Amino acid sequence: MSRVVMLVLGALLGLFVLFNFLLPMLAGLIKLVLIVGVVAVIVFVAVTLVGKSSRSS
Image (tube, rainbow, N blue to C red):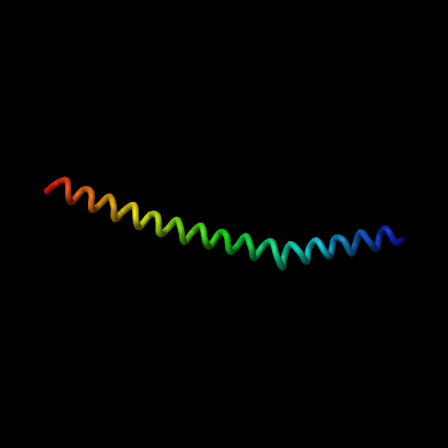
């Protein structure tokens, strides 16, 4: 009986850690990666446009 109780408590603790710590951390990392990616694309487009305009003139 105590083994079943400990199994249930372990499962509840695992779910608590998953939903309160790991998922918000992953969401924050995904947001950070998206922001860095958008900034990188903007810089890439700007450098490409400046390179083309200076080469043609």
